[in-house]
Length: 293
Image 1 (cartoon, rainbow, N blue to C red):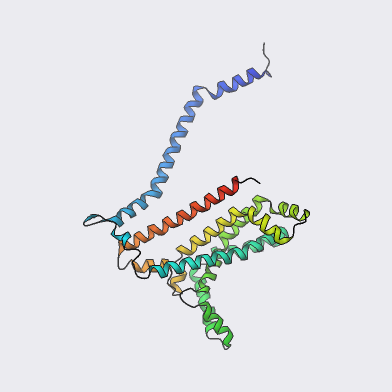
Image 2 (cartoon, helix red, strand yellow):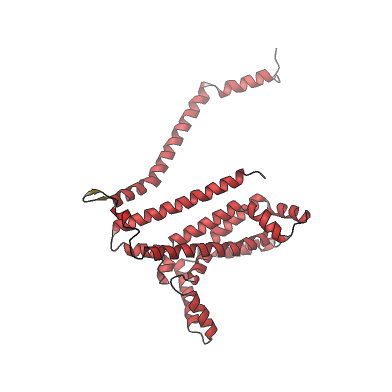
């Protein structure tokens, strides 16, 4: 007689339980509901997109791609889109240059300062954009009317059209919560303190540690932070409108007064562009995870 510890009995019992009709009957409804949830989610996300696309190609004469053919020849599009792209790149660079050394310093040397840095980084989520813009306008008014010529020149240069650096700096501020979370999760997940200590024990200096250890380890977090900042800049409307800067969202809202189909077509293209950038980020992040170390 086989004992309880007999491998054949144990494996046989387990296999019998896993292949029993009751377990198969229980797994079938779970797979069924999984496809229902995925289908409902697909309808929720793709449905409005499909309706908007149909609106852009359907008119009184039938199906036509006239709205998409007129995009490149639309007045003001290239300037507004170029301004938003340039502001997005500037905001991404300034945000990463500001936050990456700060987060490394907090995690490696000043861990007691982390709550303060987190509080300051999350403040833009609490302060309404309108209140932030009012404060920015007050500072700009003070700088433009300053008694010192140097201060006036600096503030004038920051507000110079079409590429306003003051707007890029405001975008850096409102992107701080997303950048902080992305970098904080990456640093905690990759154990940067252990990697830095190991590199320093092998004789590497700080430039080598940052370039060959820290940045490759945080590649996914850097890409996520850069994408979130860039997407925020490409979709932000309130601050640019109040400060009277003609960015792509502002131009897109103004174009609705002349041609609704053209505005929806531009919105679809901007959404597709954002999705393509997101897929590129995910692809690069996936390759970095699979790369041999």
